[in-house]
Length: 76
Image (cartoon, rainbow, N blue to C red; front, side, top):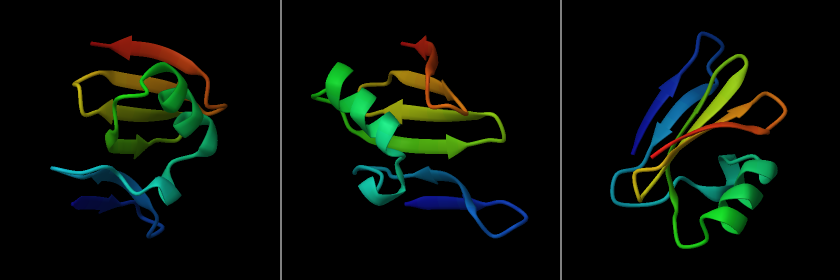
């Protein structure tokens, strides 16, 4: 696993090669969306910015959520 931290010591990016990102760090609304719309996929990378969350699934799909955890973009 690769973890990057911001200036405040909080994680800003977590990448897990060969496995899923720990469920405990994934916001519930994002986890629920992935479970509902991509049930056979796992989150292998998650990044949080000031106004967005970027999520990469093991099938190569990338999802972008806004700060309210609403999906705003899909890149497949």
